[in-house]
Image (cartoon, rainbow, N blue to C red; front, side):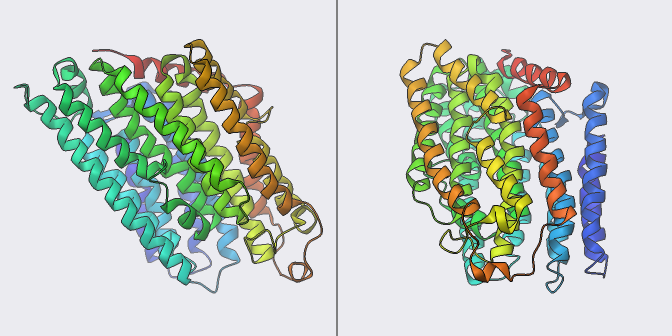
Length: 477
């Protein structure tokens, strides 16, 4: 099953590269996305298919991330067909090939249990997404692509060094070196603590760069701002989720080594720092796509903050991976529609989106309410669970600071969103040809309904999967 889930998108990417028609090639994406989601559901429902060999194991954490990415890709793939229909003048061969291959690469990240191979897979996500950011072929998009590559390469290089340090932590104490997750967990209590501490710092900075944690977030505003909306959705909901999975692997090793208190302090600091930086840049933000980038910085901070709080907040943290990923899909896809209709991302030229695009404008407003933790949407449940975990663990000051930062984000982000959706559309925007269509609207509505469902009622299979993931993360050797 592992080979089917990983290789199917890779083979379909090859097929996409061979198809000559610019009009028909995009349909490879929904075919691949639907088939991949079906295979994912089968793999999740049949535990006997979750192990292929020692390096490829679909554990509960991998299942959760695979489900999020596969679901998000399936909806985005239908949207991509509608988006590319409006961009027929531009060749989409590289776009379709890279986006399809991306699904195979992130699937490998969720299955792999060898930290070296996991590093290779996460680096591969950088290589296949960089051409997607450059799709518009503008000067700003090439600058964003190079910044994404350079900063991401520095981060992933530090992650590689951290992986070496982790291997040496066992060699230093005379044990056999291994990079398999099971092998390191078995040796965890005997690992050299100084080398393990150094490894965690390097891996936190390295994979934190891929997540977009502050201060390693500087690639995000440019990349998210210049990439097509569907690419921004996959970056914010897919790449960041995979990088967080890598961080969860390292966190689990440190817990097994008895270093939970050490990593907790670092994670809480990075979480609060990221949320604070996002607040500062979100207030007064006039570019609504860059605003979404800073929103992603904020929510990566929420994830590592919840991880730092520990056991009382782990359920909410893992649930937030789901709710944040799906809600980012709503925001980036609807923002992409608004961008095309107004031919601008700046609030000085964009207003009255709910009049110009009633469907996309309304979804963008609903997405804003969801991502800022407003009930009855999913992020409200996950953020409230993290907040409850902070108070349950006796961190009352931290819980109060968390609430304050959420309030600042709501005010800052709300000011930009209201400028976009309310008012009268400029005269120039009324004459642009773009209108809401089925393929560019229905997938966004579908994602919003899923976010609403999780907020009203967590389906039992998802609830079981989340609790299994929490138990797996806390297992001691």
